[in-house]
Length: 231
Image 1 (spheres, helix red, strand yellow):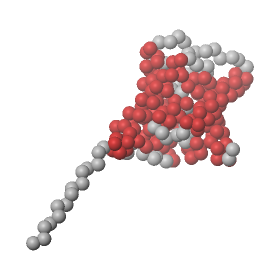
Image 2: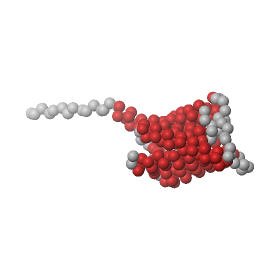
Image 3: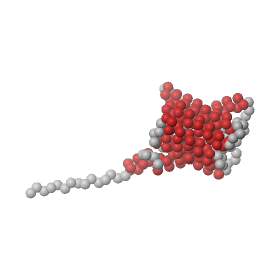
Image 4: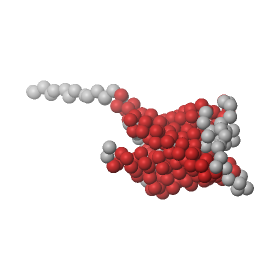
């Protein structure tokens, strides 16, 4: 395995662990503020930092839903996507274990029973978040512009989703927060896939789907020049 491939795995592992740790610390803090807005802002700022620091290494997905969404757009190969998701889940699990060790306590599962309104909230929040990611990818934003678009999109998506759910939008972070359930696994993936493909289809400068549709259009018929008769 080459150094570049190892760097990608390490970047996704530590990036997801950092995001999970930041959210864990704020969710379980005793700071007296509007916790929904505060946690969403911390998550957004943390992701902004992650994009700036490891974005050039791995793309800073740090979210299985985002990886799967980009895979549906053919921005990442299947094998690479599987490796990304494994590194992300491992990073979140390590962050959870570290937090429980430092707190000397075991977190209870906060997912709750399945409810459609919670599922829809997570899916809609992920859709909003994935719009920002799709914009950064398709418009080829770099540096601070990409980080700002992605970080603020996460914050907005989390705030919208938190009206009915825990506002996680990330299956790996859900695992790290011990909020693991079908809702927090499937809803962000569904939202990210829908959000990215809708953006790519209707708003991207030149999407893959647009290029395919153009390629399938019949070529214009060539006009056959009539030969002039010699007098």
